[in-house]
Length: 470
Figure 1 (cartoon, rainbow, N blue to C red):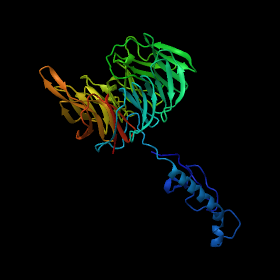
Figure 2 (figure 1 turned 30 degrees about the vertical axis):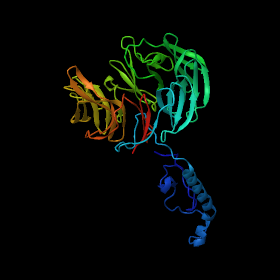
Figure 3 (figure 1 turned 60 degrees about the vertical axis):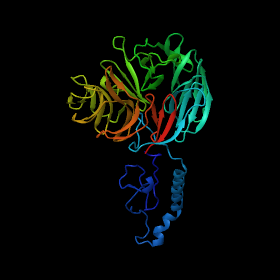
Figure 4 (figure 1 turned 90 degrees about the vertical axis):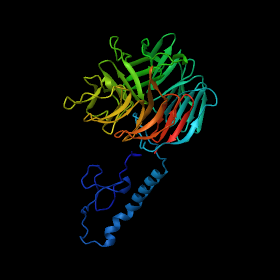
């Protein structure tokens, strides 16, 4: 990853001017990221004798060299003085190295009130409690700021921070300091997200509605469909690739049914239909899916347009091959299989997982159910079964480096009344061999997991723990 734009410095001398275009013939790359032009000699055009003295040949450098040297020195000093950029996690929660066991660095528990949620915004970990917001440093866990608010709910696009405390106020906050940047009154506001000059707000005056406001004027309002799916995670709202996405639950601060929606951001029209409603799911920070029984799209924060997917891919929590030509589709046996869109034919069709979880290093990792619940992995090109962990379930949140998948696993025990699922653990697996590289201690519930690419942050209802990776 480059920390800044490449700078080019023409070198004076060599008997003439040199092209400044990066595609000019004869350009040569110099150490330190600088581009040195005119690698070969250029004949002079003056009338001086052909055999000039050594001093005469050096004369053109006397005036130019101090200026060129000063420019280079200033740039190098600027590079050295500039703070190093923190590693960036893509929407797919990419890690530089997840093979080594993470080192626990800090733990945070609120002094009063309970934990509600956490998100990364502007390089800070913003924690919501029943009594307010706290900004933490992801590396050390040190508290940078606090903001007393009643039961705030927040959203972020990774940089901006929009929070709604109990009442009718929408706050734009600076994630670095917690200071209020803008404040707007919206009656019965429950959750809000901002996209440019537009504010999208969920309100609840007895029925849930989603509004688009521009300069405090309502552009459209859409009533959210009556909830039908028992999804107890969510309380999220995002605007990605021209679509407003919500996986909304916990209305009035109590777990309830989810009212999911995918709406055109310009018009408020639903992506789904009454006959084939849309199922919306946030699979990672900045990654959402919206699928019906026959069609689907994946929305990634960094992309301008949604990516078409088959409904079989709705559960994928990490996919390094999302731009490839191989689609995850439902095979003839009802399980996930791989279809090659280039040749318009199946790579393989049967014996895939019932639920796909992740795809990396040429491996599809998923969850099977027969004869007992198990994790399994197959070569994406051939369908060959690479490994299987019986009596083990897996689910996302998922993180990964090039070869390692980090996901939530639980043991499964057979009993007279069916299967008993054990407490979840965060587990790192070698995607191609299935070898367990490390596990964190058992947790009381499926955690929320965040990363800035260098640190692992695990959120449970009781506490937040920061780990150093690599």
